[in-house]
Image (cartoon, rainbow, N blue to C red):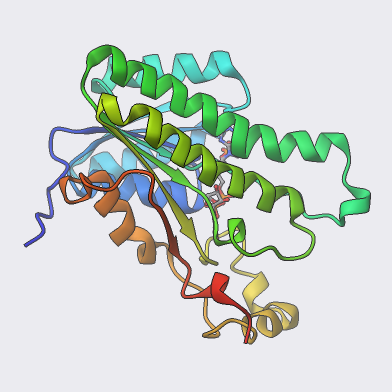
Length: 255
Ligand SMILES: NC(=O)c1ccc[n+]([C@@H]2O[C@H](COP(=O)([O-])OP(=O)(O)OC[C@H]3O[C@@H](n4cnc5c(N)ncnc54)[C@H](OP(=O)(O)O)[C@@H]3O)[C@@H](O)[C@H]2O)c1
C-alpha cells in the first residue's frame, strides 16, 4: 500500500516551477508532504504557487533562479535550505527549446538551450549533491529529460542533444554518488499538454502530428506523477541511474 504522505519531513527543490510541469511537480510533492522550494526566473508566478500550496496546507518557499548563472544556483540552494531545511530531493526541471533548422542555428541559440538544459542542470545537481555529501544525508536527484533524448524530430536538434546528454549525466552521477547514498534518475516525458503547447494540439499541424503517434493522444501532467513519486520516495530506494520514459510509446516509433 502506498502512503499518500510518503514525503512527510522531506524537503524538495523544483527548478522551473513557474509554469507547466515544474509547477505541477511542486504541487504533487507538497501534497505528498514535502516542503517544497520552487525556483525560476518569473518570481511572481512562484509567489502565486507558494500561496496556492500554503492555502492547501502545504509548505513552500520561492526563490529567484536563473540556472545559467552559477552564483544564482548557489544562492538558491542556500536560501531554500535556510528556509525549509536541507534538500532531500532535487527535481532538475528547467528547460527550453529554440526550434530551428540546423543550418540556421546561431551560437546564441545553441548556448541558450545547452546552458539551460545541460550546463544548468549539471551545476544545479552539483550544488545540491555537494550539500547532500557534506551532510552525509543521501538524497534523490530527478532529472527531467525528454522522450526526444531517444527519438529525434526535425527543428529540435540542440534540444534532443541536450536531453540525451542529460541522460548520460544521470548515469554518470548515479555511478559516482552511489557511495554517498544519492540516487540519480531521470524521467523522459512524452508530449504532455501544458499552457505552452495546448493551442498547438488544436491546430491542423498538431492534429496531423498526433496521428503519427502509436496512440493519437498527448498526456497530462498527472501522467508523470507515478514516476515522480516512485523516484522521490522510499519505494525508489533501489533505483539509481534509471532513465524512465513516460511517453505512451512515442520513442518506440511512428505508426
Ligand atoms: N511539456 C512537454 O511535453 C515536455 C515533454 C518532455 C520534456 N519536457 C521537459 O519538461 C521540463 C518542463 O517543461 P514544460 O513543458 O513545463 O515547459 P515550460 O512551461 O516552458 O517550463 C519551463 C520552465 O523552465 C524554466 N526556465 C527556463 N529557463 C530557465 C532558466 N534559465 N533558469 C531557471 N529556470 C528556467 C521556466 O521558468 P522561467 O521562465 O520563469 O525561468 C519554466 O518554469 C523541461 O525540461 C522540458 O524539456 C516537457
